[in-house]
Length: 356
Image (tube, rainbow, N blue to C red; front, side, top):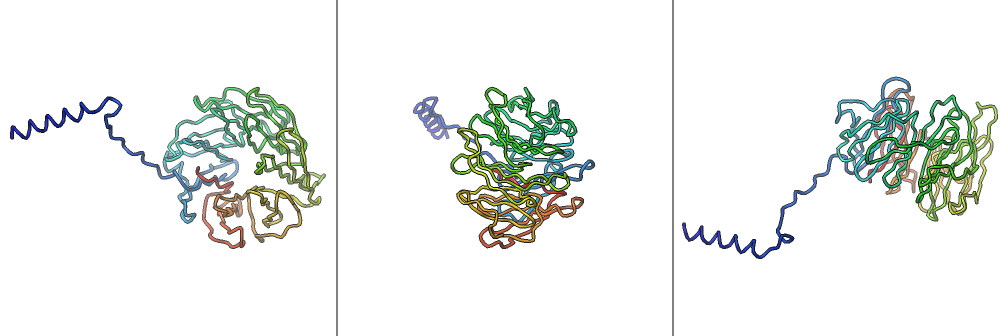
């Protein structure tokens, strides 16, 4: 026994004497991913002016839905109406419109970190540049002069400044230090894209596009592609939709394609050189280089409240049904137009987000 103990001590001393501090092996516990580390999130607006919105989770195989994950994890609700969400590597920022709130949760687990309410007034959408988030706010929809973009410090989770903008800021995207905001007009009609310097926190210029711009995406050349739906008939001054390409080096429109006065397209998706949009219950596919309003529908007879082309090419269409009961996410093959699956989700599904 003494010999064995002596041998053990000598072996231990030799092990540590052969290693510097930098070489000492320290076991590392492998990081365990939470249940929502991969897959997809669905924002459900919820019933308007009462109740609350939800976020559902869809697994990677696009076959299984876990409902109301925020409520299940935190025993609370997200408020009314869940408008959109934005992700970083670690967190998800859920924007709730009527409740004027951003709920920050851990992406993998959906455990709440903080609720942000100060400095928000009817927030809509958010984009992230570096350590800041930029959030479009309508203010009072009946007032045309109180709209702004709130600047959220992601380190402190506080609104640190605001940038005054024209009425109805909605979709927002960023390229480098430039922020592009589509102005639908709130409860009215607007027809511009604002260009904001994130460094100076001011509006550099505005670019006229079609009435009620609803979608902004960049093409492979870095140009900004804008789809406007046009003013609806109930305004008394109906206008058709418009497809616009903006050169982001000069911030000028370099190409415009008009729809007819009664055509109101929406839900632009730019995928490589292809362009998908929704019009009159059908999904159309065309190209950036040869955009046409007379392309053949790849999916017909659909009723989408929004749609997203996922990274594997699957189209995820949000069907809000009667806007009072649970909706569905319909999954289509964009090559054949075949319906692959229909998933039951919450009330008024607004969009599908791929967890990245």
